[in-house]
Amino acid sequence: MSRRLPQIVCLLFGLIMFTLYFLDHPTAKQINTLILVDYWQIIFAFTLVVGVISFIRNHVTAISRGNDRLYRLLSLFGVVLMPILALIWGIKGDSPFMWVFENVQVPLQSTVFSLLAFFVASAAFRGFHARSGPAAVLLIAAFLTILSRSSLEGLLPDFIPDIAVWVRNNPSMAARRAILIGIGLGSLTTSLRVILGIERTWLGGEK
Amino acid sequence: MTKITSRHYVFAGLFAVVTVSMMLNYSPDTVVSAETQKMYDFVESLPAGSTLIISFDHEASSLPEIRPLALAVLRHAFRNDIKLIGTALLSEGTGVGYRLMQQTANEFNKSYGVDYVYLGFKPQYIAAILSMGESISRTYPVDYLGKTYSEHPMLKDIDTYNDIAGVISIADGSLTTHWIEYGNARFGVRISAALTAAMVTTYDPYLSSGQLEAIVGGLRGAAEYEKLLNIGGGGKRGMLAQTASHLYVLILVIAGNVMYFRRRSSGRGNT
Image (cartoon, rainbow over all chains, first blue to last red; front, side, top):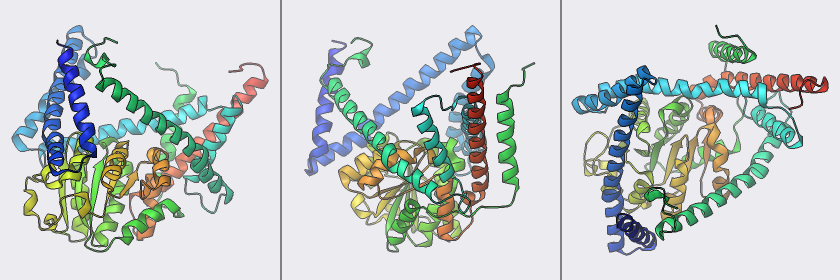
């Protein structure tokens, strides 16, 4: 029964939402809005609670075992501090919460993200070699694309940006389309399997 | 002590290239691409007084690239007297979006509630997009500042996507896809996007099929947009550093390949 009930709820709401998507009747619209605006948000709030509990448990366990104790303590400190700041002074405008967000989180995240450029440069030097025919084609395409995205107008022959545009609009887009169609079909089949109860791993690992 | 390897020289080289280029007070000229021109023309085609939703669908990490893009689009809209509704589908974009809208609105003497409103963040992006199609006022009963929806004169006649001219999603990931798949496919609202450079090719099929109205992408896109607006900005300022670092990476690729083929011809490595 512990598995049957969630499966029934999943089937029921899967069918309801699927049907509501195509209905234009005012009552259908009202139900749709009610589910989207209210119920979905309540579920989201519970997922946040689960996430926070899981985060705290994971870090407390790691700290008790002595793994990366300082970093994990700092993370936990952040998880405790930010809600306190938000509860006392709010999260808008010139609040301390926003100060921490703008002066700690934004620079930290931007810095970590920008480190990618260094790894890309290193990988380009150490690994981006024309080892085979396809690798050489990839290398040339990347070369032309990078050149076309730089401000080198006047220094480059006109055909280089033209070739880069052709690569983007033909082979690249064909591959993207194939991937998108594959994702779409995959999502459709997975959703149907979940709604119909064929796929049950989300209930706890059983195939 | 860690032994210094070729990787460290590569890192140091990139740091030097970016730092020196940022210190030089020079911005290379940029030719405007067809896609940026299309985005500019789309905003330009909207009559004064029409309303756009600007959705800040990005994280804090991409702010250095997103900020010039967002500012250019916001400046264009405010310059043309287009009314703006700000939203955010990612929590991190919420505060950033409000700051950017407020800053740009001040530049053009625009008033909150009359020329622009910031509705803020709504969790669960798919639900938010779908429910805004049914009723924006029901989805956002209060705005980011805690004022009720009905308090704002500019929102008086706006309740669904039928009442707005389009959505511009400022994104660093796949959230624009949801605007296309739900906002455009379900409700027919026109979607455009200001994207980080890495995401541009992801949206090419949507642009080609017409599901996406227009795209402006990356720092170069921002520089091109600033050129069209005849203003300076972060895009123009950053183009020298971007161009220099691109050339640096290309030199590294060439050097790496030369070394690889020399090694291979001397029989010291064939992988």
